Length: 119
Image: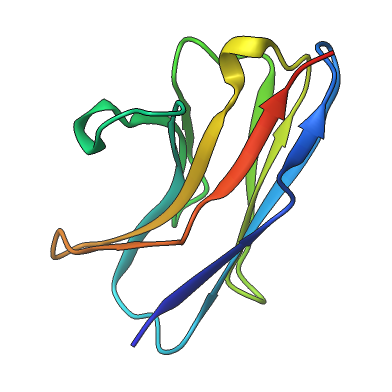
């Protein structure tokens, strides 16, 4: 059974930076990629926005809203994916969810970590 544990959320002022991390534990086989979704406060499940993804080959993909400000990276040694978020704006405030995508199409989710951007 795979578990995803997120860390790094918190409160930051507009223009500031945060780094999120997600560690996958358990037996991870046939992974396709890992990444992050986010859901603004009060959003329904279908309102989650995919923020960034990195494939097992190391190819990153970003939502247009974060491209140039966010950077996703991975460490295969400890099955960790990180999201460096710079120049944060109030519209970036959300609960950020880590995900692990398998080639079968199955998805594992983390519990979510809150990011608040406010002065």
